Image 1: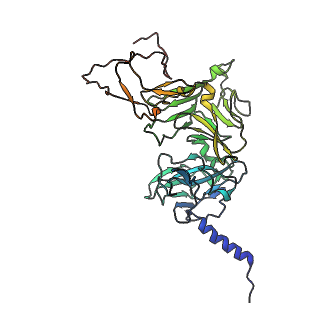
Image 2: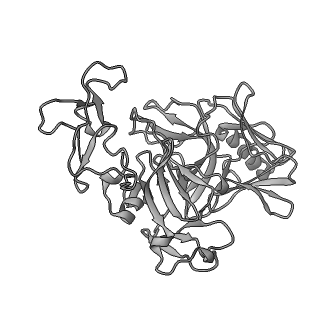
Image 3: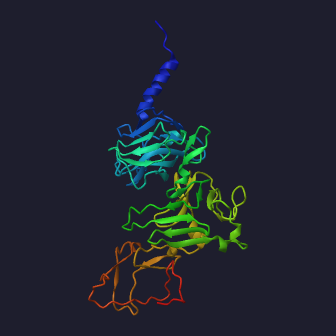
Length: 418
């Protein structure tokens, strides 16, 4: 009787095991139990869910983020990133939304990947255009990464066909990179940020962080953070945008001259322990201004929230969850909650930034009620007009005089009074 090679049996078992792990099914390359950090041309992945699907979620939440077996995953032991499709999960563990092609921060231990609580999504290619089951991600022979919905409609692309791309890499910094034969970057996700920054990531002039909308509120307003030649600004995305935070370089530096501006783009970089601003100088020179951030002891990320706050979160092993460690714009400006445009919703007043209270405007003296709370149990949802204001209204209309009230963008124009 011929002896059986144990190495061959182990290899065969690994092939079977990888089939059980495969959730995002590649058409021309098989996922292994531990995904690589790189991928070659002419590789495709299809979203397909089955009873063996592995995802990451928090079973205690009614809604949590579910991600499926990563396409790529980094192997560092400090902060580990995964490239994968994702969806929102209901309490029954099933998807209740369409899918995003995204980068996540996952556990240091890959075997623990199915038990980590709600892994943070730090970048998404198709945030505003989610796709359905059986959507396809294709890394074409021409060097282009293309996402197509189940019906074949192209949803997103890197537009890198014909640019000598030979491979794709998810770097240890969490940057998805398409590179050429000289390993030079042709396209990278760091150039297309969504609402997050990870340590080491820059935000250059011309780029923006844009918040997602609040899924638990009727308000669909978005906020943005961007760098200009003048400084760092946060806006509510109205028409036109209104700045509610500004860190102007001319005000931050004692000695400032526009002629000293560096020849490249101004930018900020998220460093360990600071948010560094580069306007007059550029790396490797020291930053012009730094804003302190809690020094990272483990995985950390920064996110522009749906309420306009710029918060820093860190993984806390002691509690097994993510914890907010900084609220940057609030800390920088010291203006408190009432400094945010919609802290109390529309048509409402924010009182006392230390212990914010939301109230509806009333006449003085309070004889007539013009507004009422949208939700008495949730005052921050704003106020609605009792009698809507229209141009053809027959009711008598007037302005309500409110004392000691300011508006976040208000600047008195004494030269051109109304």
